[in-house]
Image 1: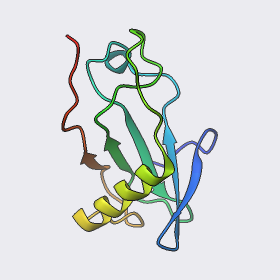
Image 2 (image 1 turned 45 degrees about the horizontal axis):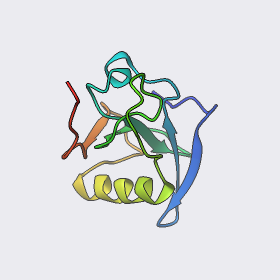
Image 3 (image 1 turned 180 degrees about the vertical axis):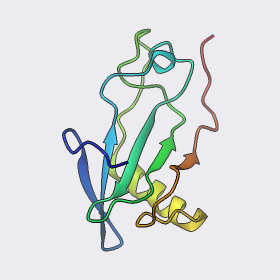
Image 4 (image 1 turned 60 degrees about the vertical axis):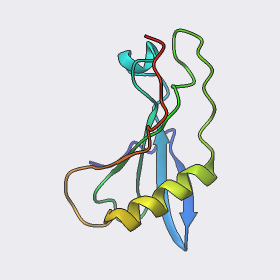
Length: 109
């Protein structure tokens, strides 16, 4: 399933264009800081398998006011490189590829 283009950003990593998107509003668990921030990445020209990255920080728009930091393009690029090394094939179809980088996330509950 392709990402919604509205609100997505383009990034070029090692000569390949990708589109990434952070959900604007947190999910219920993210709003309560019970689960960490996630965002999605796909190949920009021929979307196939979506990469879903779970970070180790809370969603910046959480409802409890817990401090979250923005996702920077350098972090997205590093995550894409890590996922490619781990076996993500962005142009082939299949189930979403999950990259868990949530080590160190601590819920206040």
